Length: 298
Image 1 (spheres, rainbow, N blue to C red):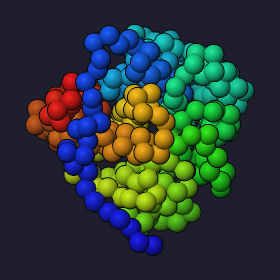
Image 2: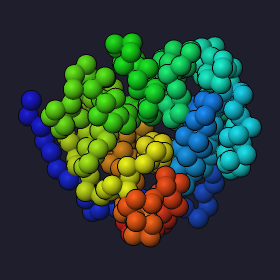
Image 3: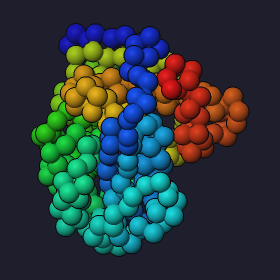
Image 4: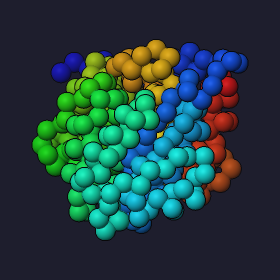
């Protein structure tokens, strides 16, 4: 397979951060639904949703197991919450229909599925059924990727989305260990029919034709919750780009590249303040304004 490769550059990304119009309102920047969380892992849902908002999306609703709703609402007052049917602290299978109905009722623009989902009980079946029911762009992360991999077939997407696997998740999706990272990134993009961000040192982003390597980031990102933040950045940035220019493979790819670059830059900036050992995932989100200014965005 011939692989066209390159680097993500600031010059490529800067046009993807246009100034916000002075007469705009929250509806202009997207309503993202985050289906995430389970008992003991509500933090993942909170980190992802907070990253969605910090990236500039206008609205976020967190759909979580009903037993965990109070924790999520208390941790992120800026988010709306929805308690879906649960079993033992995780999503019940019937929650898929509830969350899909919510997406239609609330005129959701984009859905993020997976952070803190867990692989216990009916949660994996919930994730796969929800993805199949949605008629929207979807960002698939974490245990939602593992749930899809376990079925042996990637659900047909209604619109191009983004997947964000680490090498282990990528191997499960592809049915083989990741040895050639550029080839794996391209295969992942082809598998999902959208953009793939293959995480790791020098994260790779592909649309199935081109592979771009990310130059930012380092050991500061090797901390629990970092991936949840990246998924949230992908969702928040793609929601805005999609409303501005359409939810296409091009905007999915560009949004994934922008999210990966900013995520790494947040790690670099936070490490200067807290050291590479001491950066928390929430501090990546706090560093985003400085990263945006560094890239020339407002």
